Image (tube, rainbow, N blue to C red; front, side, top):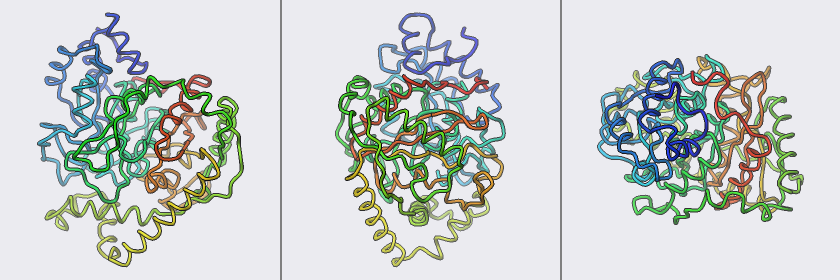
Length: 465
């Protein structure tokens, strides 16, 4: 039996299975043991019996055949808890499995073993809930793992499993990926279907994965992307994401890139901005990009984005509200009360007008350049117990600052990739690269170039932890 879970990426673990050097059952047992011993508090539910049966029957010829797989607890997997990371639904059980998870398991061959922690209803970009408590960053106990996919990021970076599902409605893949030293991709809206029972409004949510390598993410896209009739906004299938890695180097040459660490509207720690500037310049040199200056400031849409999501939450809570207010986290309860008092037809109209202006602003920027590079997070991971960062270094900021660099691309729907580019104060820093709609493959190529030229550690220094 393996003493610890595999500490490389998922693709290399499959190679180990196929070569007979490890087995899916041994790997799963190592993962389950690591989860039980871990102090990260990043897994909220495990199903050993079901997982062991799946591992024993694993087909290692499949893309992820036999690989232990954590599922973000905001997703639905039939027979498992369906809590939305909230005390309100702590006893609810999922009656169906989401399309992407069906594809990951049946077509990809993953072995789901349990649920990874998330922020309540995905409403915050930190990793604290009343249901599960604090999920810790594997780089430093006591620091946030980010959110809402914080549990998946912590499990992967913490050495418990090589891959886990995620979702991104305002940075919920990219923020925890950057805080935990992982790559994190938000694809073009609709790339991976969200059905069945797809919630449409406010059209900012995409799904994806937390993984240790670009090829892992690309392979996951191969397995899960493609049109599904129960998500009317899903895109046609493309199944050569991994195979095409390395084939776009010439296509990148002389493309234009702007490096705007703060996107013109966020407060970014100077040391983080310096790392991102240097990493962006290095990537431009490696890929043959031309750095150009543009006058760009991403419009602030935090309030409109939040109100739109709270309208969806009101539907989710249904008859439970307002009696359930005392069971919600303080921030979610406050947001619901605020939305009840402020969100009306006039605000909805202003929000749509602002969104149209924002789309025009970004479209104009991508008329001038092919890529925009920024920091992913304004700062490195901050103490988890404060809930959300209110300072960047010595400067006081509003809560909206923590998502100011990622939310814009959810509003616009453009693909963006967070890439690990070093550390400050021994905590990871992420660089975000964004491009035009549907050019996801170019981001994978840029990420692969960084990983080849300046590889990042696949797990935190003390993993498994």
